[in-house]
Image (cartoon, one colour):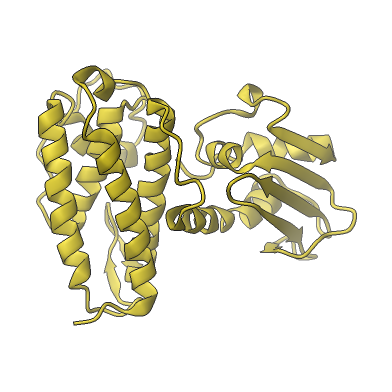
Length: 275
């Protein structure tokens, strides 16, 4: 049985990232598991619990039956409640319990993925309900796991993998949101262009162009006379787009804006498109 070549790249990126997480958290002390991360309201333990919970869901394990405490301020809708259940149920697990469950989950999920025989466009159940293609499901898992890998690395002061295969796939996942962010959310005018010039371990430049119909598109071509240019390092770009940091907390040398500052502020105030 051979996994479709298009899916294998996602599986490889997911494997590299989740095994990096496993290696990073295995030696942690009990106190380090409680360290806060930039993922709002979540500790190191919570982030790892989230990863375990969603991978177990894709393995077909039954959802835990659990009532959340009433004082969790960040539970504002049903989606947040759904996500929090597998996190809260593990909040009192010890370090050995966490590491052993993570290792076992990786073994089980890796076996499942090695035996994947479906095509990339096969329709599967999405986490939380609904339908999605298998390719998009795997892409979403690469994105989620790699972003949380970076949450853990920042919390534990263990930087790395900012240009890994998972990083490239996470970048492309984020870039899909830019046309709507610029054209619809920030209401950039027809005919305008916004440039994102990103440097660092993963360097790229993308231009969002707003057409006469008000819809946005994105490409890698250079724009002459853009309405706004953002010059930002890759890690800051990631943190902004995933809601890990607000513009007001970013040092000026890490994010520079040129052009229409009002439009730039509109974009930056809505840039947290993935949390």
